[in-house]
Amino acid sequence: MFGECHAHIIMDGVNYRRAVDMHKNGPDDQIIKAHLKAYQDKGITFVRDGGDALGVSLRAKEIAPEYGIDYRTPVFAIHKEGHYGSIVGKSFATMREFHDRVLEAKKAGADFIKIMTTGIMDFNAHGAVTGTPLDAAEVKEMVHIAHEEGMNVMSHTNGDYGVQAAVEAGVDSLEHGNYMNEDSLAMLAQSHMVWVPTLVTVRNLMGDGRYEDEVLWPIIESAKENVRKAFQLGIKVAPGSDAGAYRVLHGQGIQDEMDSFVEFLEEEKRDDVYRWLADGEAEIKKKFMRL
Ligand SMILES: [Zn+2]
Image (cartoon, rainbow, N blue to C red; front, side, top):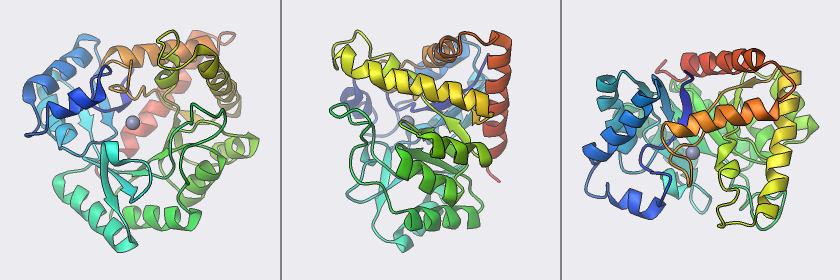
């Protein structure tokens, strides 16, 4: 079975607000254990968390060995004040504060650093990303600081400007990566980084009613096209579902993600698709442990 390379144990795939509230007086072990059990039941032995602001993923890392799970976490994600990311972490305003956040995460027991360099897909405007991406020079400095502290970097990034800035900065994994053009894909292919497209965060919304299916469909089609190009170009890609996000359940999410890859690459042999993803996952496991 494949590992889950992008999860948020703090969330439950159903109701974000309610899920987070359950941990407001400290991580709730019963809930964490229920989520870990969902992974164990599916035979999943590796989970990489994307962070949260309440120490829930850190607690999960402590408990995970009881469930035979190798759990990696950045503790919290780091975002710039006024930009996207407060739902999964803590903010910084200056580079000095960023550095302090890196040290804080490291001291708390982080395996790596998670940064947020752009917003998310704008469901009201196809092809657009919410907010303003962080400046390329700033991202470069952030990644440099993290690397100097001996920590690899998981980067939440969408859109061409953000992706190209992240690749140039040398991040170690690129999360989501919606809306990439040929240039961005070519840069990814030349780099050492692993792309974790989290396909089911959009795919699992089909038929749900939160967004119109005709809004979702073009996003899914563009993801499909890019996954196919990534396969052809030999870009390193790993399976991660963003489990915990709306309609993406712990344990089941990664199965849904794998099914998406197989469907998107329908004319390839399933074994070849699996081998490609297994290579990407191996790369994630190797990089996202404490150096
Ligand atoms: Zn995430």
